[in-house]
Length: 282
Ligand code: PAF
Image (spheres, rainbow, N blue to C red):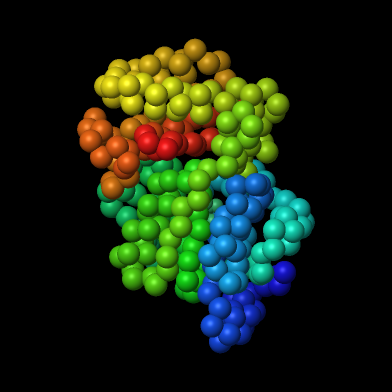
């Protein structure tokens, strides 16, 4: 696997790939790679001739400075995992390479960007939009791969691709889960064994809510049931549970377009913020 630390290096490698008429898949990550990320690499390898992963802990998307400093960094292990999965190139830029000076450009998405994560993590999606736009311009992939765990991020980047006319096909890859159902996340590394067990309340609640909604129980009752399940937990604090339509991520009581309805949770455990979601029909 080629490791490129500068924009010039990665562009040079990709120029040869493009000249050879090979399609390029991009998997943007912030490192601390787990099986979920490797699934994205596998998905890219299936659809594209050449797969590039990027690892960059993007400071502009962290609204909480402590979250940024505590974000896990496991670069040596990440390189081994990517190599073993058959990733072709890794773009591993420094902060200065991506932001030689503080960026004055703002990428702001109304509506969808202001819901859920946008409400609770002010400015988060502006930072994601900026860095992903930069990565798309640097790598110029044919396809890009993101995980369903960050479902709102996926739809925001899709809106960015549509509205800025990036010629990139977006792919959403299903969430990878631990055997007990907990969604894989780099943040899980910061949890104790007990917290990891307790955190399964998130997926248990999502499963229960999905089952209740599909059996015809109304959204208001299901929301109240979810609040109750979380209030019984000592360790987990529910930030939000929302039933949304993926067109705009606004809370909805209308479940007509079942295939567009997502159940989304954010909860905090031991100062670690976890998110997860299920489509109503999964
Ligand atoms: O999902 C992530 O890891 C990040 O938000 C992304 C897409 C790599 C942008 O920094």
